[in-house]
Length: 309
Image (cartoon, rainbow, N blue to C red; front, side):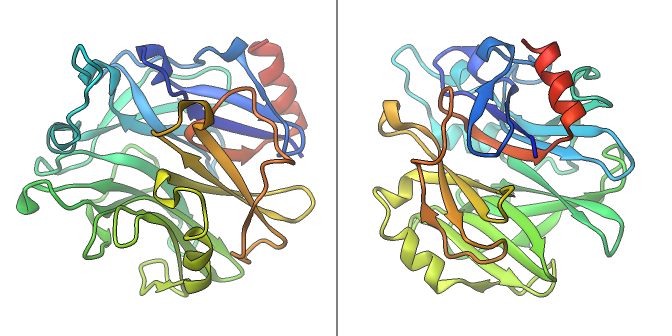
């Protein structure tokens, strides 16, 4: 069962904040495509993108959606980043690309998400809501009402990634939250997200309804608290491994450059969130930053490898 991982890279040059591809035959061992160079380069908006989401559409084809942001271009001469400014003056749009075959992509689109009072739109993800036959796009934003100091998860729905509903609040807490990831398994909705503080770590909650109420998973929280620097993990994403186990990827960021990138955690069964860190079984050509993995066919795998040798 092959996989495609779309992601960006942690670099101090603009080429890092673009769309990169890696593939795997088994979900464990990953190989870079295009010699480790971007497969898509931004030419609109901030000139860079982060937090790459890739979606296989029910009607056929694929969509990539990402944060319209280039942090490198916002650094001063000493490499300092004013994150408060980023969160209050970020793009009001998301970057979108469409493809029929994963190798030919149409022109980058900047999709305005309908509200001028957003300070930023971080880390978009997409969940297909089969009940309503529509896609739920969810992301983290600050808003002017809170003076851009409190990030929550907002959402919009679409059937075609051309027309979107008016954004609304999806999930919030007293503390800031970001990087939401939703998956439905056996009728249960699993919400993974990052708590910015109190405690600063990744969280897991479940609900029988897509729009909540979500109940915190205390066991998951207790395990996250045992990790080395738990507050330095973010960007949760999951996929099923060929042997039926469940893989959770968390991006270790910002503090130890040689260790930065996704760290794998594995549960024995899809839907069972009792994960354990499992670096030994996985190999990566370099550190993948905030992205998403999807299953692909053998034909798609061969096409990608052939095109991006």
